[in-house]
Each structure stands twice: as structure tokens, then as C-alpha cells.
Length: 412
Image 1 (tube, rainbow, N blue to C red):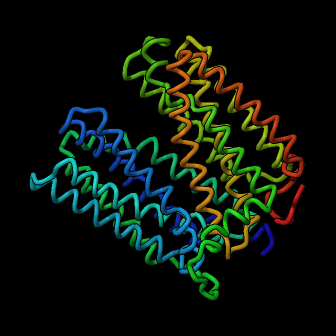
Image 2 (image 1 turned 120 degrees about the horizontal axis):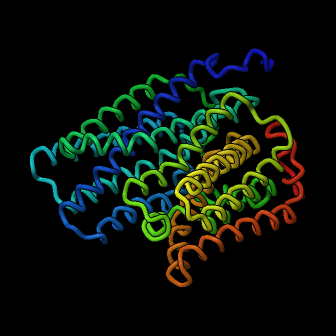
Image 3 (image 1 turned 135 degrees about the vertical axis):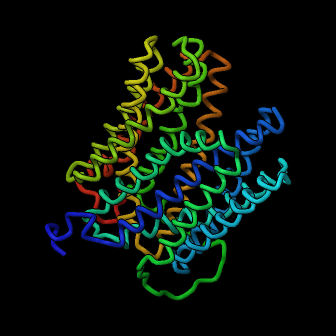
């Protein structure tokens, strides 16, 4: 198909259905997260229990990632996503019923959140691997940017909507989330998705770790995935936002809310721009510049004592991060054959989840040791150092011109 015939995502009707399903499930999940946190804290009053919510979400995402990737490469991905969303919907319906009937308790909430997290662990690599089959390769980066815009919109509006509905009770939030998941599952069930049939492989250590071996053998893929791991690990300034809001910027909860929203707003606007204007050339250097911009924005935020400047720095941080996310995601998908996309996406998910969780832990530990501002400065400088090292260690990635059309066998 010539580029002129495929320039618009709307000319591929399967993509709008996929996009609507993505935004419905993302909104539902964000609303669910807000309600669960508030409800458990209201019941127990212990911050430790909020940590347990993160734990029951994190463990399945890492432990089940490789088996989930194997399944995504062996079975129809649309069905895996659909079954995952149905399981999540059932768990949310159970939360709704238990809450409205007054039989809900902390252990039950955590158990159902764990069920949702298990389902999402299997859903994620299948969902990520579907997108390259829905649109031509030349507009895949725009499709990924549009998909990212759905997630960022949910990140911004979902918690606010969930908090508003929570004034009528947690059961109302759960009911709304269940309705959104039902919409997502219905759209996914009706989605016309064609996946090439292939022979089934037995579950062995070799097939489970095939994604790891594939990434190690492809320098470009290894470079982008490891760059994300170390850049996010070092540059996790957002974990320290409550300290900056209260002790440095001298603002209240409203200011903290603005600080938390600023990166997501920057990412959303950038994703909308990238969805309209595809990245055409020098994508390797563009990605490195974007990650370096992320580090510079982190440094500006670290030294700022003005709320306006801090918001601008966080806005830029989110925008730069979105550029690198779209390039990294598209490059990984386009350099990976369809038969391996599920397993490679699963390994990528492990890196993403690990970097996010450990990044927050690293920021908190360093801040406790040397203070929030020095810790954030160290993170920004560390991100810039990682960019410099990766440009040296992965020269092929630095010289990469296009996202598609280059050999996945690059070794230098």
C-alpha cells in the first residue's frame, strides 16, 4: 500500500476500534486504582496497606511476563486480550457487589486486585503485539503515538473522574469501571484481527527465554530497552513530588496535584503531535536528544524554587519522555518478527515495570541519604551520563535513520 493511501489512521477502521477499546479499559483501570487506594486507606488508616496494593500489582507483572509472552506468540492475541479483560471485568463486578452489600474487607480487595493484575500480566504483551498487524509499518509510529495518547488521557482524567464519583461511594466507581471494561471487551470481541497461524511450540526454558536471547542478539533493540531501564531508573524525580511541593515550593495538595498532572499533560500533547506528524529521519539521534532533554528537564526541576518553572520543567519532561517512548516502542516492534513479538514485548514489560518501581525506590533512598534536591540533581546528571555512554556503546543505534526498513540483524 503506498504511503499516500495509508497516511490516515482513520483509513484503517480496525484501529479506531482498537483505540476505543484501549481508552475504555485504561479509564476503567485508572478509576479502579483510585477507588481501591481510598477505600483501603479509609478502612485501615495504614500507609503500609497502600504499599501492599503496589506489591500485589507488581509481582504478577514480573513473575508472569515470560509465560505471558510465550502465550502471545502461540495463540490468537485478540482472544488473550479479550479473556484478560473479561477476567478483569468479573473481578471488578465482584468488588462492586461486595461493596454495595457491605461485605467487603481488605483481604478481599487485595485478592481481587491480584486477580486483575494477573489478567493484565497476560493481556499486556498480547495487546502490544497486536498493533503492528493493524496498520502498515510506515504509520506504525503514528498509531503508537495515538495509542499512547489514549493512555495519557486516561492517566490525567481517569483519577479525577474516579475521585469525583467516589463522593457517591466506592461502589459507584467500581460500577463505572466495570461498565467501561464491558465496553472494552465488547469492542475487542468484535475486532477484525488476522494473525498468521503457526505451529505450536512446547513450553520449555528455551521458548520462555527466547525473547531474552533475541534481544541480546540485536544491538538496536538491546540499546533502546536498556536505555529506557537506566534513564528511568536514575531520573525518577516524580517519586519525590510531595517533598518538593511542601518543603521547596511551599504549596499545598492543590500544587501537588498540578505537579503530578504536568508530565502527563506534556506527554499527551506530544503524543497527539506525533500521531499527526510521523518521525521520518534520524530517529536514533532524535531518541538520544529526547532522553537528554528528559535529563535536562529533571535538572531544571531539581533547582527550581518557582512553581511555574517547576510545572514547565515537568511538562517538558513528559513531552521528551513521550518522544523517546514512541521511538523505542516502534523500533522494538518493527525490528521484531511477528512470531517473536509477544516474547520480546514481555521482556520489555519486565524492564519497564522494574525501572519504574526501582526508580521510585532509588529516588527515595538517595533522597533520604543526601536530600531531595541533590538526589534529583544526581538523577538528572546520571541520565545525561547514560545517554553519552549509550551513544558510544551503540553507534548503530545512534546512526539509525528510520524506524522501519532497516535490518533487525544489526550487530554494531
